[in-house]
Amino acid sequence: MASSSDHKATVIDGKAVAHTIRSEVADEVRQLSQKYGKVPGLAVVIVGHRKDSQSYVSMKRKACAEVGIKSFDINLPEQVSEAELIGKVHELNANPDVHGILVQLPLPKHVNEEKVLGEISLEKDVDGFHPLNIGKLAMKGREPLFLPCTPKGCLELLSRSGISIKGKKAVVVGRSNIVGLPVSLLLLKEDATVTIVHSRTKEPEKIIREADIVIAAAGQANMIQGSWIKSGAAVIDVGTNAVDDRTEKSGYRLVGDVDFKEASKVAGWITPVPGGVGPMTVAMLLKNTVDGAKRVIEQ
Image (cartoon, rainbow, N blue to C red):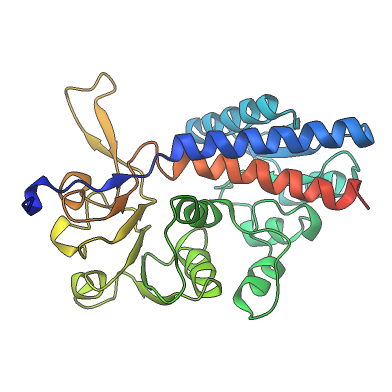
């Protein structure tokens, strides 16, 4: 019998799964174009010149072009007033060629993020953060129009890897509005028994050690040790943390919230960082956009 040191978890290749989803989306876009002469449109609103936001947006633009979704780019100056920004959102709500609206976060301090996101039309909320979409996600028997992209991507990775959720113990590490909270609601919808571990949780390792499924979204490099993982568990690592590394040209490398090397010796499945959840987020955004477009175009 092989010793536990020989064990290697199955690495879930997020890039490959995302590539498959993008191909499926491209087919759906092609069918809409051929049948109705229309294509989905995604508007991305960016305020200011944050380097990370700019690179995210250019990645989304490129992804849209690859699958045939039309991009609408709205670049606004850092000092734009809240009223102007909301006016822009209203314009996009009224534009029939736009089926999805995404406001790139974070917004400058003088702008009320909650207010702006609440102004996005429910039917175009491809980020899935409108209070009504989140509210429906939280309620039994209700279906939101859109699911938030990263949580949706996490569950897609599980299902496409043949990992069943029903009846399993799932632990979500982190309770952010963007990942932790919505992914725990999604797991609950899929009949998992869900526990959320957060910064005030006592003895988190004890709770994590019981999990069949771990979703790590705390934003702390290598916080979850290999010894915290139950044998055969599925580990989805949402964390993307930069740690100093002089051997890298950039001076840093990206790691997840889970100690990948050690956890791989115990887990049944694990996602790498980078190349795990990251590519799925953009793929799910494209899928949400085409779903929103189909609801309108096929009416």
